[in-house]
Image (cartoon, rainbow, N blue to C red; front, top):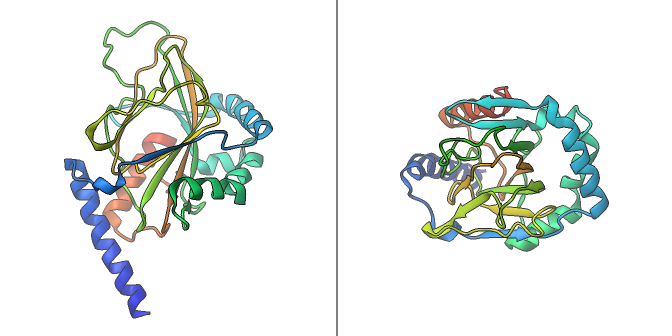
Length: 249
């Protein structure tokens, strides 16, 4: 019992410090790698999932603020939608095996269902007319790192359902070790990109007119125990409100 409490306390202190200094660009050099897992879902599951996502876009929450620009549906809303039958595939043993095999982390798992960020849908589309400011980013956040409310390492997963763009590379860009790593668009659909978003700078580049992108955002941790830190949880609630229109995390 004492060892467990000591471990939790040490993790809480480390997490608070990490969330404070990563805004200043202080990150772990050992957390800069990323993985691209091709054909993460069976083809029939992927096609049905993509069709369900297309039907749900009209019910997504649109946000146009300093926090974020785009459309999204949180995990709590997905559980009560036509998307629900496909969520079980993200929790399957086969899906979990692929993520653990790619990262080499035997305890990697999706965070609990109580977190709306566990599985969410994000929609991106280009403007009707070309924007005069070509520096505007795809989700309005430019290069950034995420926060973390879990005691374990945080892994972001981006599963591309639609990448209907004119570029040869993905709109998602990562910057591990300060170097931009581009990801080929060819074969990107039905691929899961895994990276530690609270250590690796990332952004979504601007969408051109008639371009469209739909992704599933998944959240993993090797120790998915949520912090008790009220400041970190309050900040996450504000992020949830901007993305999904509710404060629940």
